[in-house]
Image 1: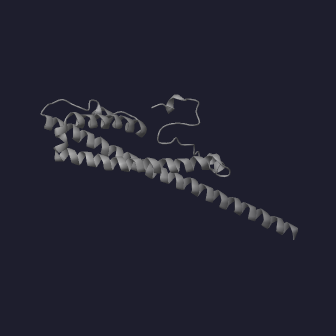
Image 2 (image 1 turned 90 degrees about the vertical axis):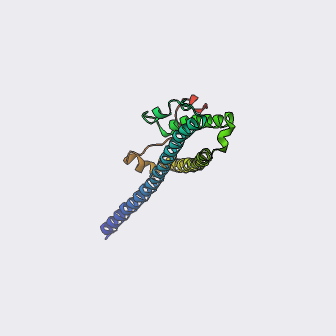
Image 3 (image 1 turned 90 degrees about the horizontal axis):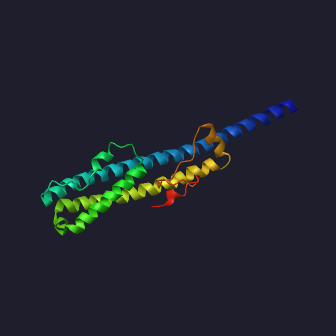
Length: 181
């Protein structure tokens, strides 16, 4: 009889560990899936912003009646192998230039197509900010799971590692220059 109780006890322990493993694995996968969804939303918003800038360049050329390219290097960005964070920074520089062009040429503000592009850009900016927040929230959740027991054991078993936040700053490294703008 004691052998039977020992056997049942071992089976209960194994089943409990199995359930704990599945629960922790599902939590990790849930966070990873949410991060993947956020990355998709960020990719989409950045592509839309890129397209808006290309259309704005053509519209500005037509309205100001010149062949000058205002956003030099914009088309080259598409061919570069850069992270979404770096792409976001570069597009933000071009968007600042767009705002400066708008200020320098007040007649552009009256052009319907230009207004539409600015409104579209504003909407994409809001989507991008929401997607960044979403990404960082679930990245934080995943990183917390990876750092705590017992989910850290499951994460190591599946090769899941800590992800950086969207801003590209790594709190784990010794580089302090990545906090500068």
